[in-house]
Length: 535
Image 1 (spheres, rainbow, N blue to C red):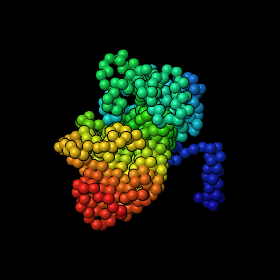
Image 2 (cartoon, rainbow, N blue to C red):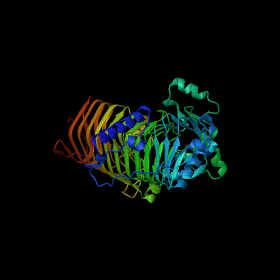
Image 3 (tube, rainbow, N blue to C red):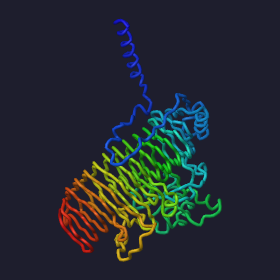
Image 4 (cartoon, one colour):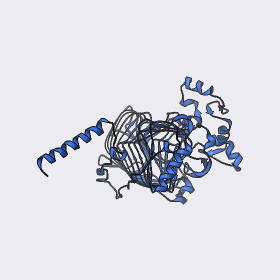
């Protein structure tokens, strides 16, 4: 090629790039949010790279299937027909372009990338009759709930990407506790038509059926002794769906989009393999009951990276089923990288449990920031769960304004947020020591380093079971300032504390029922007595 030809080719390339930039053309979502492969370097356990979905160039727009962006027309059929058409074609992209799109439930099928363009807002209808009651899993148990606004079952090679927002219309479903609202918010809620209060007048339900469903529960949020379809239909509003339910799916990508205002949990992948959340934003009001941002349950090979979470309950939570149901399923949550995420609010920033009966293992958490979460790193379980939580590695965590513990291991979890515990709740029964069985949970091989927190309640709390202490725990290079209380370690074995700085009034460290603890290289025998000391 001569010099003139090279010059013309280079000039043409620059002009094309300039034109594309000038017209506001965008790269595809996967190009914008490319995954840095260095994320797999120096992992403390063996883990395969998370497989990413890929799609043919074929593309359709939901407007071609009759969708209307006026906030009035129900686009359920148009969106689902577009997904079916792309699936039948062998795969590709379904585009939801700029506009306000009102819809009912969306089912994602294999080989489909559901893409939200800039300024695309998908609002799910508050007509609860559009969400059929189905058999599903919630809070670790098989039960019945309303169909999720976005769902997939046994799908492979799927994605939700782009730049827009999904709104789950959660305020039409949720019950609300008075203590979580301001006086003016509570007054406004009482003026909503159809709402009813419980007997204590401190919980508002959107209708009488929701209250009836609450009365039928004795174990978290799953109703009992509801038999006929008519009975289930009567409590439909209580059967609040998770916003995204992906079950037994492979090669799943959520990228770039915003999910908000979920009726209960927001994102719930269950028994999935090779799943990625990259640059995802979740926003739920802080009063949203069970408003978890992400509950990754019994999944294998996952990336949770570069995300922003603002939750009404736990933010980044790993689970694996509850009690006998979870042990019978026998699917641990394993091989998970959680990196470069920010949590603005939540009951916990990074959480394991309490439904962890199938086990949780091989987890790496790094480079995360928690601001104002009730607890920072929150590990919770209780007798009856069984399951083993092990090989957890956490490093480089920054926190501010944590009203309770920046680091919490509690095997006496009773179903309440840490901020809701009463003195009676904290009066644990250490005198009764049941035998170790399959129902005994175990937490072991957990390593935490390079944590900084300014402003907290109790700095650190390790609280194992008398019959199963938390075991092989190492904490090093931790600085917690402006703490109301120091470190408390109870029912623990083989603990290493190194280079810990705690600024608090009173003792920096209290220990009881601790076997084999090493502090800054020195061994201490604690036994059954209570020991108070400083680092």
